[in-house]
Amino acid sequence: MAAVTAAMVKELREMTGAGMMDCKKALAATDGDMEKAVEFLREKGLAGAAKKAGRIAAEGIVATAVAADEKKAVIVEVNAETDFVAKNEKFQTYVADVAAQALTTSAKDLDAFMEERWAKDETLSVKEALASQIAIIGENMNIRRFEQVEEANGFVASYIHAGGKIGVLVDVETDVVNDDIKDMAKNVAMQAAALKPMFTSRDEVSADYIAKETEILTAAAKNEKPDANDKIIEGMVKGRINKELKETCLLRQKTASRAFPSMLQL
Image (cartoon, rainbow, N blue to C red):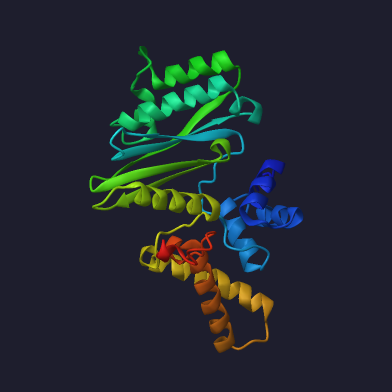
């Protein structure tokens, strides 16, 4: 059986909002498997739908870089051991340099990116430049991931929230690019940062996802109402899935703006 650490319990609590002891019990019951632990808690009715996988680490920052014509952008995540280093100007400059390189890279994955020449000093690879920064800053660091977005028929907007704790890229396909459209894109990005949608619209939700959610929510409903018949359970599950999709599909979410009750009206 895998050892359940305090860090694992903390991560599961942040993902689900469940209590500390419930998280510890869930991890113990699932042999430390985080995904299965989330399902365990949800089936017991102790947690809502987990936040989208890929939450950034508490220590580290996200940065974006956008091409001059705004047709291409990249988002990168670089982790450090402590929040103190994440706020360090040298660290932030280094992350910006990583983003600038990731914007133009042709590497298809992180391993290939780490092996290419470092643009700031081509005698080094990206991996070697990272090792050099670790030596300078005095703390272990890690380029965790990057993602490029391109839009030939429009533009890509970027938004960084909470000093680099959350980053968003929005791909906007449009025939018209003006200040109003750019403001709309910024609002969408801020919405995504605040409410973390998993999908753009209901059309993106796969049958496999619905099937898995139905399985989890059915188990939760039966635990909640063990004497209820199948019709009642089915109705409970259907209602909960619809509610969940309103929260996880961007275009079905309510907005923070009083002028626009839903994202569809932006």
